[in-house]
Length: 396
Image: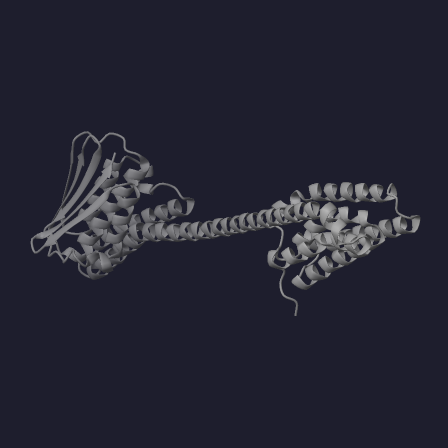
């Protein structure tokens, strides 16, 4: 199996390859014209020009598509092409020594298709063609005097151009690789952002369901059970429980519709935050024997909707926890409106819990803390044998 090509031109290199094509065409035409005007025999001229034409065709139909990656390239194909270029150049020089000027076009082709380590000895060898052919024809002394300095110059020039070509290709490859890595990184960032967005949306919906629908269903179950226990003893009281259950079910339905529609909580859609908190406490007093107190310190004013939602959800979750877990007889809800922050405090006289581990298991409290953090606020929980205090501070 062929080895993979080591020197693959990047898209940037290929984009400017037409400049090399212009150079190659100009060089081919100039050398051909030089040979036509030379003193060599007609046979030598025709032979040399024909061989150079074959070299141009060899480059056009085999070398160029490989160099510009229009066809799959391997190291073996690169060596075959470079070998063909050198062989054709040798034959052309044998016909007419003036064909050695084609080195200016042939040397870059060798560097484009071979590795630098392979190209250097080949370039040195082909640059020795003119002096060797002249030495065979005219002798060593004439060769050294006439062609020695020129050969050294052309060899050095060819090597310098070859190193420059390899450096340009290497830099272009590095740039292309960097661009590919950046594109892959951007795609990965996009994918991770999309996944993070999906996760955040799932968490938001889960928190909404927990803070609204789940709490409403808990109240429904409690009220229905209370109505069942009073059916045989006190039908009026059972009817009141059922009436509260029906109202809770309607409110839950409104919350569900608001959640689906992506609107604000239905409790805020029909009034202010202050009124919504009042309704939550009234419902608690109707459904349980817990005494509820509510007060506002300072001028509450108008708050951003997102802040009102966070505060209302915190009140709902705190009251649900009081109803379900605390065994409290009294709860106090307080809003303190400062100049830059608004502080919500919910205090009960229940049994309390260990606040150091509660966030590991209590989804509702984790949701409260997450909501506060999303708006730049913070949540603090103090709990013990004498009761629990939940404090949320959010910016105005």
